[in-house]
Every structure is written in structure tokens, then in C-alpha cells.
Length: 378
Image (tube, rainbow, N blue to C red; front, side, top):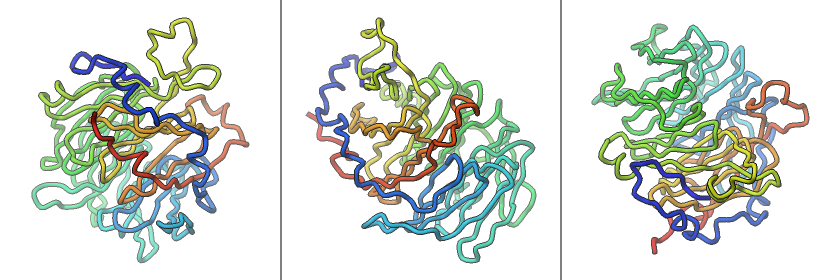
């Protein structure tokens, strides 16, 4: 799969990528030992998140529930540990830094906080429209941890769990479609390709407003573990590597094609220019997840595949077999030894294509270093 480079990129040879790793192709056996999460959701899965402190997995789904599972890191065996509900489809569920709480946002316009010890959930915030994404973030020089929520009401709100009113509200140019944070960086992807980057040392204002370098609707965003940039992807099977610092962006920023295939099901591993006489099917990129140790990342799409990438080497590390269903959400555990992926309908083809025979399940893949670790450069 060749990268399509923007003008700021310095790499201009597609063969550099294509020959970088001859073992990246899927053999069909890579997922044979993946473990199914028992008693999974009853409707499409919208978000996955591992606790930063222990092997607990939070799952948000369209059946209006957030489920929390305990996972054995050695065997992958798992069991339900907790469950709480909203009054509409849940779009986002994320952990606090100490692993004691989960925040969630849903179509019922509510932001909720679940305490693992007491097994109690409470509403801590509300928007004027569905809440698309939530995160725990650490703000200011004191690293005060609060919940931030982004909504289709075109606002971003910060919540202290002790007050029903938001600490601060930021007006955005459009509806929130996706959001992520790392270190002191918070990035919000909005409708009409608007992107807002916020420095959490000064969380009350947008530090940098821009439009996505991708030509089509933003689908997902993920911040680098170092907090110096983000990967953003679109409905058009394309992902962009972005840096906050302009000099670094000019040096290292680029975009690439992914999650595309020919009608016969084979991945479209060459550039569109060389296959102009063949139809290439393009799929939305539904999820991006960064490995917490190596800084490599995974993309997953409506085509039913996920891939591991190294942005620094501009290299695909591993392509995995098709799982015969859209992949709607992914997550690495705290040390990157487990990769969770959700098989369910992603609504990309409208409600009329949400068939009852489509799965709603989560699989756990034990990662190997030769799949996800950076390769030695030649």
C-alpha cells in the first residue's frame, strides 16, 4: 500500500514503502487465536477503552449501555465486571487516569460518571444535542483532572464532578465528530473538516484552528502518545499525519491511502494512478489507536480490516485478514500486549443496511513485537 504524499513531504518514492517490509501481507491465520469477549453488546459498538491501571475494558454501544469487562492478560479470558445505562445510544466511554472511574457521553445529551468502587453512575453534565465524545483531561500547571465533552451542539464543555454547571465552555465552528487527547494536547474534529487543537495548559481557548488536509468528512482522530501531533482519518479511506509545530509539520507531515480494495476483495496496494482502468472501492476509516509503548498505530475500517503502521518510517508494519464485518472501534491495553477490535455495523451505508445477521462482538488479539514494533531501518 503506497503512501500518497502532500507537498510538505520529503519522501517521493513509493517503492521505499512497498519494499520496506515483505512480511506485512496477511496470511489468513493471524486472527485464528483471537479471544471473543463474552456477553457482548446487543447493538453496534461505538467505543472501546482500556483502563490505564489494570486490565479492564470499557465498551460503549448503541444499546444504550456501557459495559466493563475484566480481562486476563495472559489468556485473554474475560468476564463482565460492571454495567451502567444511558437513555439513548452511547457514543463514547473513557477512563480516568487512576482507573477508578469511567465517563460516558450519549445520544440522550448526557455526560455520566461511573464509579467502579461504588458501582454507581451519576449525571455530571448535559448538552443541547447528543454528546459525541468524552475524555478525562489534566488541565493547567496543577494537572487538575476534569471531564471534557464534545457535542453536536457545537460546544466543548469541561466538567467538575462536584458541580452541575460546566467549568468552561468553548464554542466550536461545527458539530463535534471525534476527539482525542494526550499529554497537554486536545484535538477536536468537527463537521465541514474543521479541526480545533487546544493546549490544556490554557484549556479555555482554541490554540490552533485549521481545516483537515483531507478532502472528505473527518471520521476519527487520535493524538500521538507524546502529545506533539495527531493522526486524522476520513470517510474516503485516507489518513493524515499532523504535527502541531509548523516546522515539524513541514518536515514530517504526510497523508496516505488505506482501507481500499478491488471488487475481488484484494487490497488496493498500488496508487490510484496505476489502476485507473479498475474500480477501487473506498471505505471509511472508523478508528485509529496508538500503541502506548512503541508509538506505532492501528487503523481499522468499514472494509473489515485493520492494519498496523509506523508513521516515523512511513511504513505499513502488518495487514490483517478481513473479519467479514466493519470494524467500528479499536483499543490497545495499557502496555500494548492486547489489541481489542469491535465487529459491528458502522452505519456508513444508512439504517437500511443494518441487517439482523451482522455481528456485535469484540475480539482480543495478542500483539506480537514483529507485528507492532518499529522495524530496524535499512
